[in-house]
Length: 300
Length: 298
Image (cartoon, rainbow over all chains, first blue to last red; front, side, top):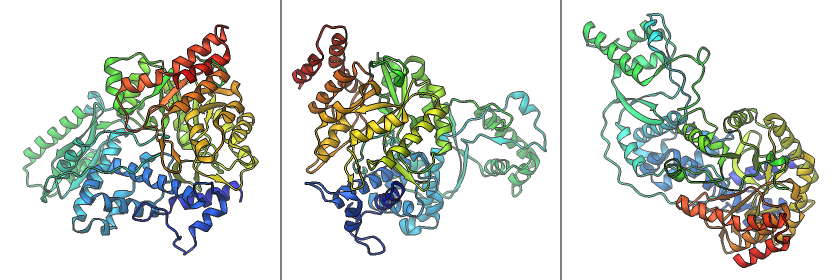
């Protein structure tokens, strides 16, 4: 077995899902004996068989990745319960293994994946999905890029055909539930940690939490970063539509048309709203120079 | 000897790992600490709080980067995006040297996010050394490779772990981050004499030393970094210092992290050995005296 063959063999073995008791499986999905596979390349010693030595790495892999996803999605974990959450992570990573050197990217496709896997969320599928989307938006906003905001003179130069760039850390979400209340309640009780270290991992118990009751109520959220703190800002439907259209690259006049397409507001009221949106966006630095024209601001 | 080309001729004393629970203490109390080691990957992001905090630390302290995902021993090409981001961070931190592990962790573009042991073969020596050289050339700073804790050995191995380490660092012409806790953990898991390992390393290549705690299970030891340093590990540290001279030393504590004061006090125990070694270097104490300190402490 050369180096590449050994690494392919072992990668497959350490990524194989564990049993419900967190033990290495005795057989592969194809019915091969894992014991025989382990014996083929791992030496036993006087205390541990080849299987048991390989099992340490199999368990380490799952403890680390489940820990990392759990850190990004504490509210989803609290909603689903530890058992179902862990099963979901196992299934997700079997289907979408990590292709990034950083654990930070591990959960990036989870909301999208969860959308087509209601078997892990049951009757609370939509709520779970929205929690997942908001928790991933938090991650993106937490360490996303911040470009140089438009200055007052740049704002004055804006016209109907201007295509405005939004801050990469600004995430826009339309929700059927006010999930920010639930996510904030869980985050309040979850200490900030770092998953990345060279230490071996033990399986961590997740503390049970009483979650606030959720009733359907449409909310539009702008998840953004200000002074290094991530905020969930409630915006109205029109502001959400406007910002979404701008993010899609539509010129300002077209974006405004989309935003107020079904609005019952009078033109005067619409004008007042637009002034309000732009005042808030300017204050929070949401409009920025594009990456091409701006020098990135490295900090914040 | 300790200030060598593998740590950019620096003399860094005793540091601790920079960890989230200690940020507030460090930034408000500004304790005197020789240096901090950061996990590079925690700061290889586009923006936000991690970089702001790092800049605040950099304003007041010396920082050395330690990575966990370069996987020098992976059999395929290096990840260019990873290298590019790492280089950006080295420019920010001005780390005098950079370390990562002598292990593998990715294959066919998929990542295990674990420090998997290499088979100790001549093929692995060649592959690993080539990759270390590529990283060193690209980053333009000295690289030190760290021996990992391991729980498995392979039939394919053609030499001992310390022979493998020697072969790799000679072929790559790089430094060593000698983790004496990892040596101890592996020695217990694979039944070898850890002193033989420490005695065999090329002392002139040791850029830095790691110390840490571990957890003992019924049939093996796990490198959990969640305890104080245990006596046998201090014993290995004493031998390493005796061989390499006073060397930049770093305590890793990554889980069940106690107060900053407790972690720092644990790290500063290393000074007993370093001072004895310094005295030995100027002729005040014999080299054997450093080892005797270990026995007294134990």
